[in-house]
Amino acid sequence: MRIDLHTHSTASDGTDTPAELVLGAAAAGLDVVALTDHDTTRGHAEAIAALPGGLTLVTGAELSCRADGVSMHMLAYLFDPEEPALLAERELVRDDRVPRARAMIAKLNALGVPVTWDQVARIAGDGSVGRPHVASALVELGVVPTVSDAFTGDWLADGGRAWVEKHETDPFEAIRLVKGAGGVCVLAHPAAAKRGRTVPESTIAELAAAGLDGLEVDHMDHDPCTRARLRGLAGELGLLVTGSSDYHGSRKTVSLGEYTTDPEVYGEITRRATGAFPVPGTGGA
Image (cartoon, rainbow, N blue to C red; front, side, top):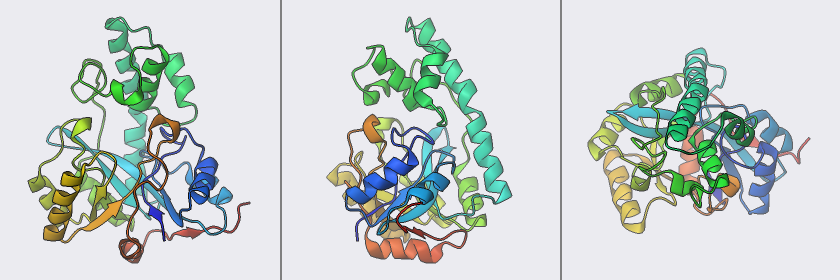
């Protein structure tokens, strides 16, 4: 089995629609794909309707969190999307995205960059607006060559010249909420230092004690030494080890299925989840 447990669609900051994403996952030879858009489950219905036979969909979301001033992301799998407490927190995070994007645009304007809200809104389309959409606007304007180049201290990285803080969930609260909704929690790209500051191993140990299920180890932003270190840490803490592409369509160079999760780990994730079940493809509707 080939299993990719971290992808994004146009429901947040990917460039493939949910339908295009699942069709692309099947074409890439995947057996299981998780749709984990940022703080939203809005793409799930479209993905399920288009799900081809032979491909299973894991429903999920990537939750925006912050601990001790460090931004971090929590992958939540197979939770009940209508559970009131988790739904309310996701809506609180999403509602803060528009004023944050407008504030970043204002900072960029003050730096002499002629980006506009209309431009960013056009790029975001129906998705939850975020920094990657602002970064794409900078690429369009020729300010930076790629989206990744916008995530530096000069521009949009945490603490950068055009960075603006937004509401993010305390990760311990995120674990509590996801567990309360019957889901499973995996800390996304925990050592992706190129994105900015990362949480120390002591915090990961505290999260494990609070119910964290796993670490996303095999990821494009982790070099081989980092992966080996994280595998050792996961073993010490009794955490599951996952791998995934963090696919964003054309917004990143990584391909669907470039990094994958062991079938036994996937089986354990499905065994632990009680809020929802993986959806087997029936050929689309």
